[in-house]
Length: 300
Image (cartoon, rainbow, N blue to C red):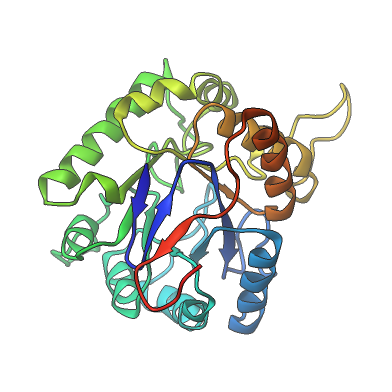
């Protein structure tokens, strides 16, 4: 199975690691650490040194309660980073839900659109949708994520009932709607949206029963890294773990997700996740070496 993107066909025979590059002052885990273009590019290089297969660049926090950002401000944050990262010879994902930002990123050469709104969001007064932007591009990859409600309210009133069939149905319909616009199935990856409008029990149900989501017929991208559901993975009576203290449970959740069929793991801690996947590969005889075919001038 491969993921078709703008410049690359990404082999998903073994799990791929997507390194997070937050060009934001307010992300829940590393806000402000890579806010300048120079800092963000240095972080890109470090993530690749640590073993990342894909870089995911985002300019707006979507943590619970996060304030929205204008498209102009988001572009000012990410375009200089994207322009520099395009020289690094790896697939680049842009984490955005705004159609104008998607269009500008793809025009510059981005490989993947990673959208927490699953291409449903429309800017007020604009007729352009994310689905139209992605469908209008010949080959870009796309990740469609499930989110209940919106960042400002998703954890105030989280989902109710059995989360797995609800998430599966939503993702199936989102993918089918995009295919109806002419987007090839090979370009689409699905994300159940860990932490986006779900309770802790629902998040762990998605991990426990993750294989049920494979029934949609698409590769899964999973993002457990430093999520708040991991905060209580401590001895009884101990203080909850801060975002920066959640390395061990993050890697454990990523490894369990990979074992349950995840094709892409979106993480902050690339080096440790890669090392854990090497252990998994050693006992499953699945190759862990990179096999991403560049369709442009640069080869990996």
